[in-house]
Length: 539
Image (tube, rainbow, N blue to C red):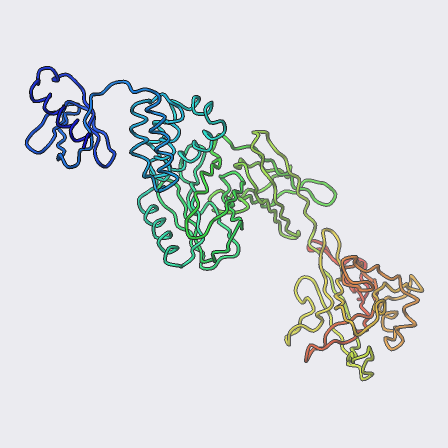
């Protein structure tokens, strides 16, 4: 009643003494808590508040109080701040904003008032308005509330970003929140991915990996924004996703973020460096043979390890065996090929320091080989016993081509010729089996009794049915340390005329059942693609 009486008294004064208040500023407090400040007049059942030349009309029933403007005591400001905090504790939801607005109007330089007003605005989603209050008073707020100002600055930054988000992204964020409120759990996060100039990174330049989710969805928006969402559960917690760059003209970098259920988490801004022509370095590739002599007519190809093939370059070496490229920094793959030689490839990290780099690649002549292999296969029975009805067979395997294959398919799956650098290896695959005791399988090179004797005749003279007697005449190969103890599953360098003998476990050719294979193999020939046979073991 007293407020209304004060209002009418001031209005009466305004009507009776218009000249006296023509230049006076008055404060109108509305029932909602909002405050208007300007020149006040009355028009019928309304107050007219002139604010900076614009008239604002307010019905009397919405007016709580009209009073003259002027300085308020600090006690009044403190009371308003306490009242605002009381409303905040009791009601929340930003209902204290009107009282804080009045306190700030009366004492804009009070850091405590400024802090709570800026925080209230930020929490209500008004990041830009909160920043206008916080930024000029940052130091004073930090002094009044040590540590709290920094957290408020982070919150304001997040709210400012939300206000600047593309409209379609805002719509999707609202849809995710609404789905969460309806009981459907979507785990989501969004981030901004840009280069050092603030330009958005295209979708094909990166890959997003998430774990533990279903129906993963990656959406892109203007200004480089990316939204990641997938089906999950309310118990989903702290499972990081990552963003991997996968294009050669961006730096090799990984970003991690943790999505959250029911409401998309703001993962921040990820900045990755994009390389340009000014960042190119000179990479010289030297191609040599096994004797370190330069090789000409070698086709050298260089391309980014991942991403587009636009940056792929192909050159041929001259007499000095050298070519030069100007790649962008990042991981690249260099491959070399020449007829008659084994192709070679290598991954290299091109530095971003601007320093030139050099790489040496070695090419080996492509080898050809022929191996005659004979075997007897015995079905392996439970308890480690073997069926004495042996199946016998023989086959010539070769490299390249052949590889132990026949028109009927694979005939010798446990034996193969493989070139490793400048050597030819005979690979023997021994399948681990609990049906045989460890150490019962072996592979070794037969020690030729007479170096001048014909290798073919010695090979034919070996009786596989007496393989246990032959074992004492072998130089046994050591088992691969990565294989179970006693297994012989690795490759052995061989030369023409070598004879290998062994017992291994494989599978029969019908039902894939375990079988013991006792074999002997003669390396008949090794030659290069550019030369004739060397040290032939047979005509």
